[in-house]
Every structure is written in C-alpha cells, then in structure tokens.
Image 1 (cartoon, rainbow, N blue to C red):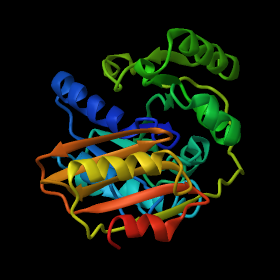
Image 2: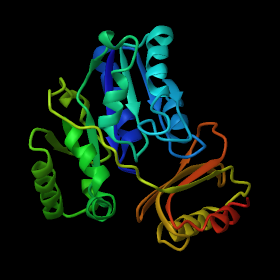
Image 3: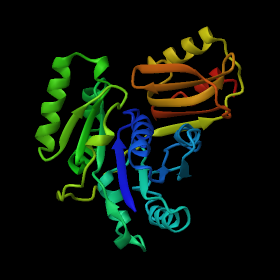
Length: 293
C-alpha cells in the first residue's frame, strides 16, 4: 500500500489537494484510494467534504495525530490495510501536525514492510505565508523541511513578486524539495513521483491553539451569513486562523475562513450543519451566539 502524507498549515488547501489528486489519480491509474482525516476540533468537516465524493474516509478527530493521537495512527493505518485494502492511502493530518512525527508513527505499524511512503507534500498558502511564518515558524519549518514536494497554493491572491520571494525562502529552508505553484491545487497529481531519502528529525514542539465546535441552530439569509463570516475573518471575535462549516442559508451553504480570506458557496449535498473555528483569544460564546447556539 502506498502512503501519501499531505501536510500544510490551517487553511492552506489540504482537502482541495486531496480531492484534486484523487480525481486525477483515479482517471489515470484506476486504483482504490482511502483517506485518513485528522481534525483539531471535535466535529469533522473535511471528512464530510471528501466522503461526499464517494471515497473511503477514516476520521481521527479531537486531537492531533502527531501528539495526543499518535498511538492510534498505526492502528488506523493497519486496519485500513487489512479491511479496506486500498492501493493508496492519503493521510490529511491536522494543520498543526508535524509530518516528521507522523513518519515516525508509521514505523510502528504491524505491516510497515508492506507500506511504501510516497513523497511528503507540504502545501503553503501564499496569501498568509509570512503572517503565519512569523507566529508559528517552528511548525512551518518542520512541515517544509520534511517535505519532498512543496506546493505554493493560492498564487492568484498575491502578486507574482511575492510568490517569487516565498519560493526563495522555501528553497533556503529545504533545497532538496520540488517547489510548484498552483491555484486551487490544480494540475499537480502527475508531478508526484517517489519519495526522496532526506534526513529529518522528530519535532518536540507543541502548538497551543483554541478550538470551538458546535452545531449551528440558526438559518441565515445570504447577506446575514456573509456579514457574520466577514466579521469573524476580520478579527472581531478573536484571532480566527481557520474556520469552516455547513449552515442553512436558503438551502445549505459551506463557508471557509483562512486567515483574513473567506469563501461561502451553496452546495447540493445533504450534510448536517456543523461549524469549527480554530485560533487564539477566541470569543467563543459570542461566536456561538452568532449561530444561535
């Protein structure tokens, strides 16, 4: 079984990458694919997004698989190998996960000799790279140093000179990695080859962030929802680094917040309302009241 780890800080585009990768990979190779999703909050959003496209998804919520859930990752990988029997397993760790520790955890699998680690992917959000690097540099550096391939995503949101600057900084940290640029993680699957045998050290760092997860009770108009999400992304309710969820809004809408950027779109799928917000100095009770909780 091939194993592909898709890392990246909160909101970088890991789920978008996985959906694009799976669609391209299935068209080309027709192989069975399973996905492990690990979320920092108590409610899974990414699992629902991936599952609606018909893929096998195993969720490891309420923690980080490189920290509190590290022991359960080998069990999940072995269980997928034995029962689901995919040819490819994608692991989407929490945005605060350190890939070096995930690689170490996989070594504890019972069937480790049956697994082949594919290139470790690190996705970087061009629009928030410098802001997050300043605040959470240790985690960026671990993700970047461990990567075989670094994808600079959301290049449509910044000027080309800034993308050049980000690429130079990434190459300074990890000159072995392949660096690609993308909008919405498009056209990347064919570039994933074999893993480089680069050295890495397990990280002892731990990032302390707050999270709140809840089931929204309120139905919104489109204008109401946009105003609330804009205010949250703008910092009126604490430093929300990542927010995502499904709410009722003239049907069902999905919202996503990444730093100061946000997106709201209507979806046709049947998914239960839920919301997750991650950051620091969160005004949790005020956020919940916005959603009728």
